[in-house]
Image (tube, rainbow, N blue to C red; front, top):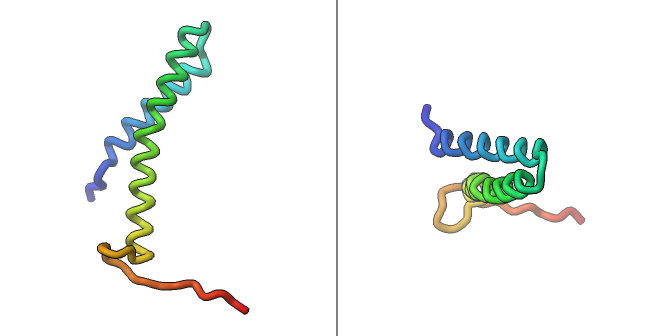
Length: 78
C-alpha cells in the first residue's frame, strides 16, 4: 500500500534531524548560525505536512461541508 507523501515526510524529518545535530554539536558561531537557520527552515515543511494530515482527518470525522464524513454534535450534560 502506498501512502502519499511518505518519502517526502521522511526526507524532511532526516533533514531536520541533521540540522538539529549540526546545531547542538557546533563548535563556533558560524556553524551554530547555519544549524539554527536549517532547523528553522526544516520545521516549516514538517508542520505543513502534519497540519494537512490533521485537517484531513478532522474533515473525515467532523463532516466539514464539501467533504465526506459523518456529522455529530457533542451535547452538554446538565
